[in-house]
Image (cartoon, rainbow, N blue to C red; front, side, top):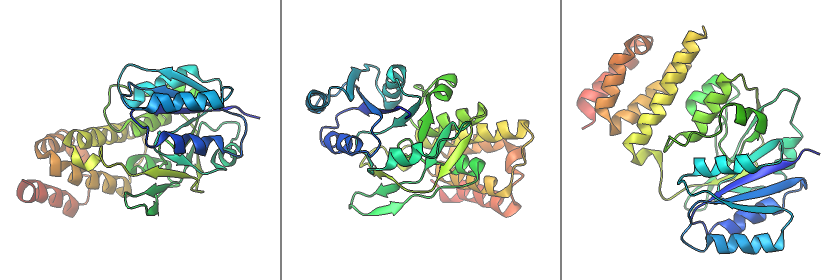
Length: 287
């Protein structure tokens, strides 16, 4: 059986970590190790981690990362794993009991990433199915290729791309996925939703203009990469970029104007009505 390493970055998650760890320990797949990386927690997180470690000394490893951010904590976990496959899990998210067993059954010789469907649990407690796309390129552009916790990653490929980008404060997971794609990673879809991702009360992308700026920049760079590779830039790809530009313009109008001038050839590929709508919204709608 394949050993699967579950890497959980932990920062001030005493409210959630017990339920999270329980969801891993109750997995129907037995060949797992759990690596918890405490990332400068100031609450009772470490105390709760140690209690679980005492109960499951053969399953749980606790280590520390002083550099702030989940990306740094995940990289620390990546440096410690023994398994060939890695399940990253945020400490406030949950796995359904057969999640890992199901995805291990999908592993094939050349597969590097199994990208999975998931449910988003809203602050009200209701759940909605998150969209997932069979088209790899469209999925990467539109954030529909699973998420950090619903996916399963091959360690070898993660190491080749250098792990997580600690220089980014947002969009880390799709920066990683795009870099994996550029490294010729093979993706396989898993349409069965077996992960629950909780909505956060803070850190939403819509509240931060710099996050939208990064979100747009990464996708424009990816489009440029595809063009250089001779990939046809389809209208559906441009439509995704249109939506990103509109959202970015709400928070950072001057940056979007700069980008549209710099990337004028790309934007002129859009249908002229869409192009004019972007210009109109930037000039007259957003303050």
